[in-house]
Amino acid sequence: MKALEHQDESIYYNIGHCLTDMGYASRALEYLNQSLAIANSKNNHDTVYTRYFIAENYVYTGRATEALEMLTNCLRDEKAKKDKDRTVATIQCRIGRAYAYLGNHKTALAEYEKIRKLTRFKSKLPPHVIYFKAISLNGCNRKTEALQCIDEGIIDSIDGSNINIALRTIKCLYTINQSDSVLSLINELIPSLISFEHNFLLIQCYEELHKHFSRTSTKVALDYLTKAYLLSEKLRKGDFE
Image (cartoon, rainbow, N blue to C red; front, top):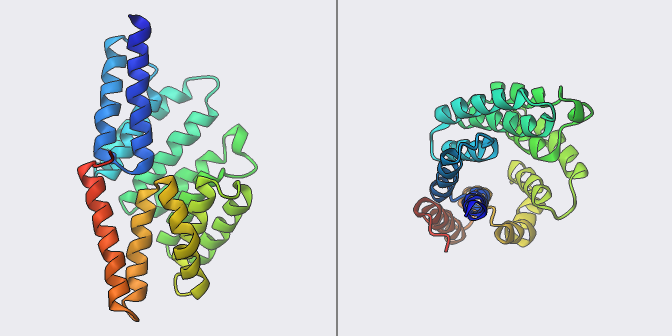
């Protein structure tokens, strides 16, 4: 019976994790909170992974302040452990993302740089942190640095991987006025994002393509705006099945 309870907890967590990656924040919270409830009922206090995914979805659902509180508690718990670097880095990255969602990109950048002080990351930041650092650099009107940062992440990530595609996508979004960027988005990157079910980034692509084509083709622009709206509604309703 105990094995079944543990399995149930893991199933809820893994479903919530997948839904988080796909952008179904509200549905992800349902499964992650259930996983946390099962863990708490068994007095299992090693729930940092579940809690920081809950915090991530708090950010996506407009509850960034609550996310910061939960992430700060997670960070305190992890810093007390010996083998802590990877998890601390992950939490630190999510703290930065929460600040970025609140519009405080300067503080977000400071949080990302704290990761560099950890033993295993002294030489360079991992690609997924570079991705969010670039977004905040751009948010601070430092686009040239953001593009340099993105190029670094592209080189360090595996070609065709989820993070590699994401980095190449935001590079195109930041250079949308260049024809090759638009062609790359339409012909290669958007199909890849669809296959990875990277829905939040897909919405950004559709919205930027809408703005881009609104100058030249009202119909094409409207098509992209419609795609952005439909996908946003799908995520809001949690219609992932």
